[in-house]
Amino acid sequence: MIRLAVIGMGSRITGMIQQMVAVSSDIELVAIVDPDESAVRNRLLWKGMPKSEHVKFYPTVDALLEHAHQFDAMAIGTRCHLHTPYAVKVAPTRLPLFLEKPVAITKDQLSQLATAYRGREDSVVISFPLRVTPLFTASLNIIRSGRLGTVNQVQAFNNVPYGGVYYGSWYRNYDEVGGLWLQKATHDFDYINLMLGKQPIRIAATTTRKIYVGDKPHDLVCSKCDQTDTCKESPKHLKMRGDPGGMDANDHPCAFSRDIKNEDAGSALIQYESGEHVSYTQNFISRKAAGRRGAIITGYDATLEFDWYTDEIRVVDHHGASRVDKINVRSSTGHMGGDFELARMFIEIITKQTPSRSSLRDGLLSAAMCLAARESSLTNTFQPIPTVDELPGLTHAARRETALV
Image (cartoon, rainbow, N blue to C red; front, side):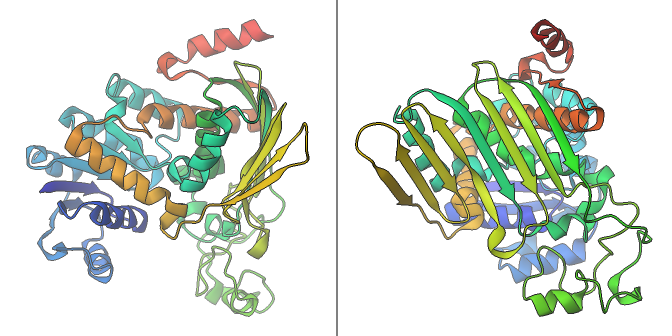
């Protein structure tokens, strides 16, 4: 039996544990730390989690870790600002760890996490499902086959059709999430890094806030608002639209609070050490069929485009006979098949000590890029991106950036 302990049993980590159980019937959830035991127990029953009635709840992380010798692996699914502090506490146990993204939301956290797991990054699985989806794997195989020739540019995009969740739920609390670079772009930066296989060296970014801005109190909910009959984000209009777009279709916090800091669009330009550059854009007001997520990779011999929303890869040859290949790669499981692959990877790390293919090194680099993008958007400057080996000091990256000017 694989005995799993969880810190922060939210809906996302619950779904991941369901995937782990689907991979191996030997895994058993045995211990949890969560402030809302009643809600968690109800969720486990509703999800049909095996033997959930026997799960032991601990009042604190420290109390749980006193019994670390009884566990075979751990998972952290808390809110984002707690990922690093709890991962650092778990580090001395040397147990395999499944860690939700973003791995850190500040530079200090990034440094603390890098130090705690130095040399053991491959024992951690970061929740980056996009990099292991069947669609991306097929795209990556084509790119690595050499069919595209020399690649000079990547154009990546993420038009989020459920973006309302970042303004009408706890995700709007900036101090807990660190902003939308860390919430969404962390996934995209990660798969781009894997695709290019090179170190990003600097980034310039900008953001826009034009939609979800206002002067409403932060604790205002739709049922207490005098504009609920006209507001397009009210439960009434969401139900009329037939698509909540990430908002709760019932009563929810006002998306036009004066305290919301999340932007509603952002774009970044990333330079890589090998000369390629990447343009990336994310938008949080797209809805319905406007949702898109993927990239266009342009090489001398061909262009490849993929989109997770259409499950399609398109390859256009540039020379010789006109040839356009369209490949459909579908998956019915969570995150376009990526969650199942992450679960299988985690089980293999526990049982076979195989190295993670979505390791903490990947999580640290992606978070470093997101933090640099956030800083760039605030200062209107190019920002250096440190390598993982340059953490925690970050000084080498600054010197390298100076040398580029």
